[in-house]
Image 1 (cartoon, one colour):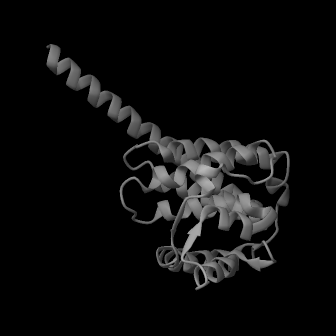
Image 2 (cartoon, rainbow, N blue to C red):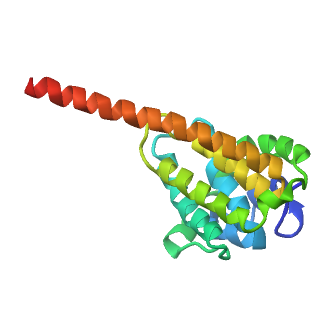
Length: 205
């Protein structure tokens, strides 16, 4: 089971934060502080996973910006840090609680399967390669590409959970999903380009 921050599983820590009635709002900085030294993997999951689920338009761009910063830090082996304009972003605790109630059941199922194995894939220097992959996926997530959210978000979520639990199998699955994501997104972009070329050629025909 993935342990972060004070040693609790990530699902337990998120529930605790969501149920803290002393808070009116939950800021990104609150998550960063609560998750401790392993915040990068945990936050990568937190910001990526909601994009797998149906979300309002524009959500991926909002959630994708922190992912880009965190993935870059993972790539260069840096401690987790986010600039003020991101760490100060917040949402009402009730909205955060609603999101967590959707995410946690999936996370709890994953935590039952995760355990340290093939851990070389979750340790430096391979960990930095995972960071590069997450950075590329996060960049795709930020862009307004039709159907470009779910597979990159799933890939980052698997990679993040693999890093948290040092589970090389989860990382391998994440890399497979990332490859599939690259194929799908490339196909969508190529389709858009062909459509634009067709429209332009029709105008000047």
